[in-house]
Image 1: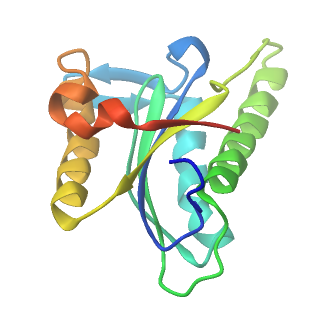
Image 2: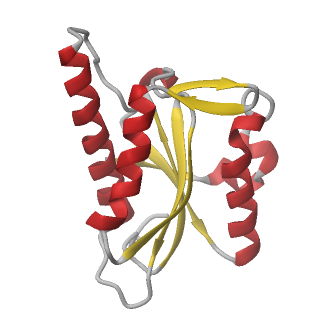
Length: 162
């Protein structure tokens, strides 16, 4: 949303995609996400965000083969970092650790992430519950339904440059 301060109190649904939607993080097997080494790094770094951003809550998240979904909540009265800065830090931390592994294995990683990310301001408890369910069910829905079919507001989400 133009002129919106993404450091404001509230809950945000974010989606971060891999470059060219490459399956860097693992695969779906029997409707479950099986993380590979890069996927484990992505999971580990999401968990560490809480230590880095104490004024922010990192709620439900799901790593998929080619993207990540998560809910980030900025608390009441907090002096918080904008969502874009948090996402940028996350992407940098994951890339740095994946690059180390790539270099150890004498492989070329290239770009891990798509340049931007998607976000949606969660406006009420019903939306929060629906998004949470979507995130948790994402491995089951893999290849079956598009986000806009399940969460109609998703078609209007903003693509943010970072």
